[in-house]
Length: 583
Image (cartoon, rainbow, N blue to C red; front, side, top):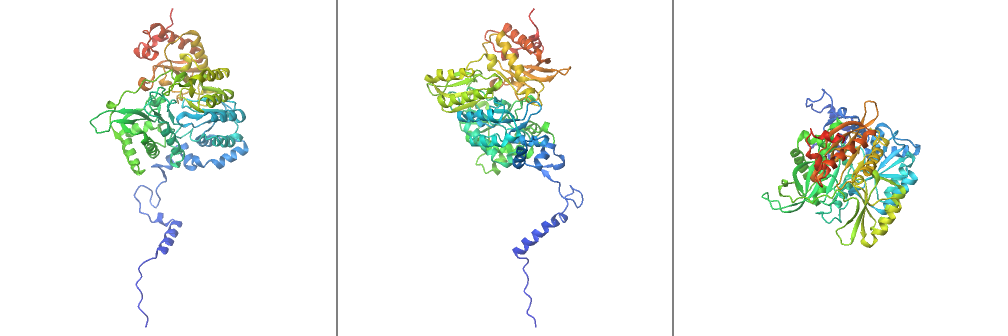
């Protein structure tokens, strides 16, 4: 007689784990999965990237899906060993590392640095001078994001350059392609007598957070973030995707405690004729890092990955609305375990921002501490020879506490120079051909690389701009700031729409180089998009036409009236009168 069978209680945990693994390896979980009607019978769900089917991705998004930009190092090793330039989509991926194949306009790679808060040290500038001499073209340019670029880099030198800049505490990662680009702060942060708060530490923290977050590399499109502490020199925050603007909030009926906050503006992209829009949202300065990260994650998850012309944050805001974006940001902050939400309060309770000194980036200016100064050196369209880089680095080390600040106006500040050291510091700079004074024309002239070094450029902006500025200096005396922005193509790296005079490269009917001209743009308290004046005009007509405009302004303005005020006083119908030459 057999003993009764013991009643089974089901599979053991080990047996369940074995069966789950076997089913997965045989893909039986897909074969027997219920269909939701959205795919073909018996098929699986389409593969997606944040809600976009793989087959709908644009080619750049598909390249990033197939190889994350952070995983490019092995291929970079091979390219370096073979002295081989990255081409096509490989070049696109490599730009996330800060190296750009700009041939045939300029030989080799261009390398764009990442200098968060636009702060670097004098000894780091010496390292950059050595790299420029030994491994690049022997010069550098300061960019319109307070950054440095080197050019004429052979592929075989890329890894050595990366090693050298890392050893110096610098980086070029995330400075190009679909990255959160160099994050800017006012160049006088920390020593500005009128700033509300030094936001540069938060700028650097957010930059480092992004560089250490895989999910925030290879964004749907480029992304610009700026921090404005309310100081004397503008960082042109209006043109950024996110702007954190320090404000002092007063008494209000909303229950928001009076004090210091950062007001958040979104979606600035001046090349598309759009400045950052008010959101009615605030956070504390210390919360800006988490808010910036949360907003980047919302952008990653919801931006358009099918059409690069519509992938910037502006177009997500246009499609979904600012309030939608703020709600998604609050949800993301909860996911990130932040212990706060965005504060909603309109700007009626904000104290006015202190005025911007439009000439404050050039010359000697006192700092907050009595007897201490900064020197703003004048560079012609941002260009620096390696010897000038060495001089600036040494002067900063010997006289300025080893501190340097780059500006979005394509020049450099040397801060912390005592009164009794100023003449010595200036003498050393002047001996190297570095001016510490400039006319209003030179102080306000900025230009992108243009056709000389960029495949998108339609005109030689730096050469044309240099020639134009010199002509204006020789012809007129100007007692008011005047910004002239030259950009080589509609991508607007030099932000022509916010210049007093904006010039954007164009192709003439005969195939020659030319420009469209706009007038009356501005930023900060002068914010506005320039209005079209004329174009395209040939590059060889620049001096005559811009000279006529400036001459008419000087002849017709009210005493002491700025160019911006004068240009904005004219109606669209009156604007062409600025082109009329005096008989």
